[in-house]
Image 1: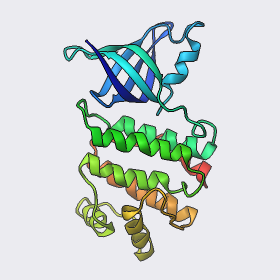
Image 2: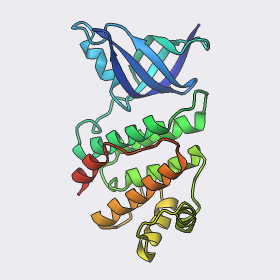
Image 3: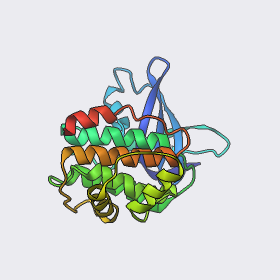
Image 4: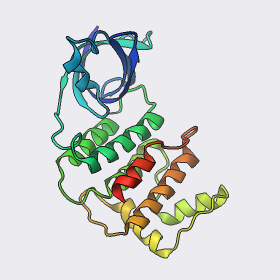
Length: 229
């Protein structure tokens, strides 16, 4: 049966000579894998752009609950990014967040609220031209709500760290900034040094590692730090 749905591309792997298997978070079916034949051939080379990480797409799909890999009948861009692929700061943030999503986004059922959060978060990042240096911090804190471990304040994070024997510098200044980040919207300007931003990101990643099984290291983190330093 054919189904229409929106999707957010997470990543893809090469399959055979000209095909790919794409991991897509769909509005209707959650995270699913789709095989796309011939997309890496000379005739299909333009279509590969539709499968770049975080691409927002409209899909017509063949879906069978009994199968692990499905097929795409039609795919087109739902929102062509204007700045995200071309701005080194934004693209570094996007690469980092895409890796986090790949590690944490496991849901294979419809979750309209989560889908809307992700979809419009990436549109905001693409469209904004100011105050996005803290976007990844605020995104990660907002995303914890959907993963089931959203902190109420910095004291809750510290309490959980102490219970898990995790020691990391976290003075009153860091606590005050973290509390602001927890309550912030993407548009909220929060002034902090680059060192503070990197340190708070480390704290948030430790918080994810504490709660997400097999979260591990984030390979794109070093690139993000270098670009934003």
